[in-house]
Figure 1 (cartoon, rainbow, N blue to C red):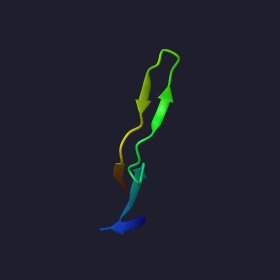
Figure 2 (cartoon, one colour; figure 1 turned 60 degrees about the vertical axis):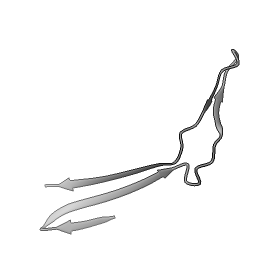
Figure 3 (tube, one colour; figure 1 turned 90 degrees about the vertical axis):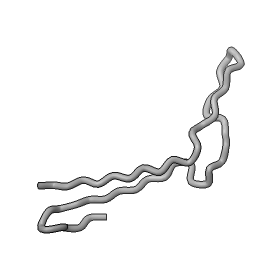
Figure 4 (cartoon, rainbow, N blue to C red; figure 1 turned 180 degrees about the vertical axis):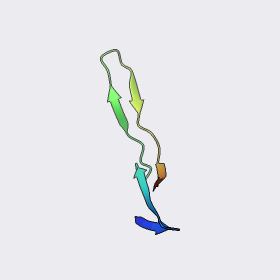
Length: 50
């Protein structure tokens, strides 16, 4: 989302990883080791261009 606040360009972004918070294996290795992927993660950012 892009807008101007007090004449300054501003961009806001949002990102969600694993939206439904499902558990699943992200990797399995020959030595029997396996890893679960990350739970739901929400990332927010704002950028101002002066």
